[in-house]
Length: 402
Image (cartoon, rainbow, N blue to C red; front, side):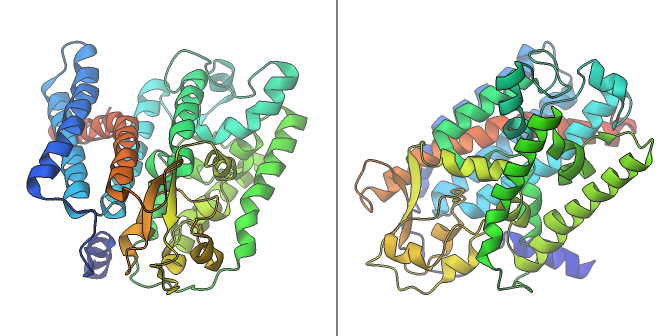
């Protein structure tokens, strides 16, 4: 238990290094944090109050989440560090999502097991990982090959597509580090060890997500079923699953659990990388191309860079290689998590707004990225966190989460 506790504390423990050039004084930090303070209050308390007369536990959960969000944003401004506090919120959001999702499904359907009747009645919440699979069938047959509701209910198809499209246009693949409610799981496990056990990973593996994407798009178009959901999604292990009624469903369950343990838990621990996100996720392959249309990227100053390789070996999503040090640009898979910016010993890496001169107005560029990115993470994850904490408070006070 002591070893585990030390590993968890080390996940977000500050490491001694040069002060960040982006750190601000108390006054400026408080002033710049004020808009986020107001926006998150509107988002959290506004949503809760609009639902009617909330109970005291809901208000307490909302207050705790609101304080937590704004403390983290203030620390981002005050310390100049991005990834440390983003990761903390990202991991907590993922854990909160599991609590929120499972309890909501059990309360709504009575079980996490997905039956044929549930599918026919459209009671399956839509997941953003399904998006690549529905495009061709929708174009060919004008139907959505997913057993969920188009407009009504929890996580409707149209609602999730609108959220994903808007976030992707604004943030690009930053979705994978600032929005994906699964991403905090492999991100968290990748921080448990101080040093990686597996250090050298052949970069050819970074092409695997494209192969998975091609495979599921073709098989979904042929079979008119979401094949990734049915056979390959690791996160079925911690969400809902098909009721085990046959040999086929047993095989599926074994595949789900095996992929989750290997890609989300074991390999991230051993490599200190997000292996599910960087080496397998088909939506990640799609998200790569959204980096071409959003206004933000991460740049490297070749004049400051000493080619130490520190950023390359520590990039969680395999988005840097030696060529980046010369070109001054990250690879297309960059999720803008800010880790390379935080750890660069020469402070040669920074956020950048496309269309402006690289290296100019770095603080302004960072702020212009942080506001929409953090607000999206707070908005998308805030509601789930409030629900999860409310459920936990209910468990403590009443003995039941439902």
